[in-house]
Image 1 (cartoon, rainbow over the protein chains, first blue to last red):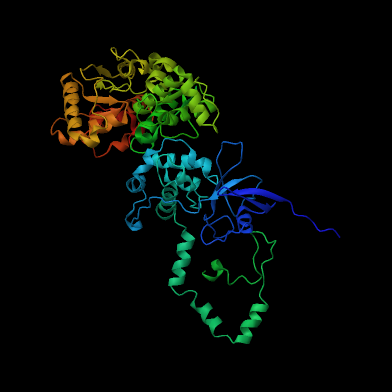
Image 2: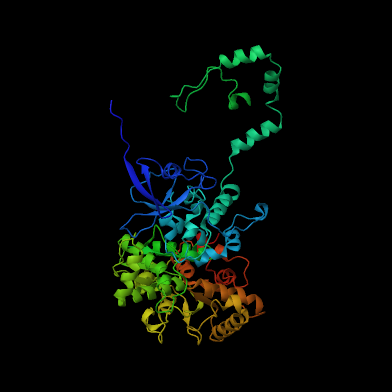
Length: 249
Length: 294
């Protein structure tokens, strides 16, 4: 049986040419090329924002961005990672913020230097419409800003490109925090459940468990009813007395 | 009639009553203002430097949005937005090289072709609706109300961006007449309120406010109607510094909405020395239209 030959492609890491197997992510390709990550790598799942990468392709004037862990290396990519970009982060006492646009304006007045060049949105590896988010904040719409900025993973590439030197990713995070903690309607059922915990409503259930013998516990565990993977939202166990709404009734 | 509309940042924050009364009044006149689905700050002030194209991106990007929406006209009511957008539009219409540079820079947008006209709401009222039409739709004529039309700077300067000949300010007077009130001419109709000197040199704005209010009062006005949120803020807030010199300040769109019998959004004027409500109540104008008074 013939050995399967892996096709090799050239990529350029910080200007240096390397041959790497086709099909690897940029991150794997860099590791293949001999780089060992200390910083610039976190979850490897496209969520943590540590592996922001910028690259160009020969013959194309445009600058592109990627998350190194999520993007396949392509032939002739000229790339460098930008795992961190210095940005003005202003501390604030969350309890003293009022959930009004002025909270943001006072902490980050530089956002008004935005000239709508849109370099931030163009570089965003998560396709957050960063320029529009800043526009929503300028017009006081924190809710819209928070929703539009939901996918931001704080990689900082927007800030690396900002003509106005604004730290968009910190500003957007503040908008989300203000919305989440001070503007969004509170979940009433959550508050009720928390009160039930504080009132000791669950203590009998816990007492029953902690007083059981190890053998009985194992038996209960092995015989427990498991929700089928294909179960829909309407699924309920045969024994319903432990369901929150039944139990608290 | 449906027109593209850019309210501007201030109309979504400090001057919501201007935005809301504008949309309500135009609805009553059969004009639907379709807010651009995506818009950004216009830039606030027009950049004078010849080679400073960076500051023309924001207004021109808004013109691209209007073009995308298929609108031939982009309506604004904020005097600052109007002035900035209109002058940026003129700049790129008259300088194809600058338009090319901007279009090339904004490569992810469709090219701006220069076919959108930026118009102020007063122009829409004058040219698209017409004073007679407006008069015909008035439910509550604002009788016995003497209103000074304060145009400020940016509706008439520079001449190429003016809504009408700068030496003959008429549009706001004509509107005041159409809604049954009495327009009052006064010497400071088109002088500057001091604008953003309010930040660094507030005494300039206090002095300007004193002069404008005195001149309006001596000309017999009971109230001042404005279009610009910054004029409104300066003329209102500085009355706190001017003792007995009190004069209600109101957006012209609030008067229009009041006359048309729709919500004039006067409730946001509360607790201000220049609150327009006591005067309107004393004239029986608010009671005559209880739906507008919340």
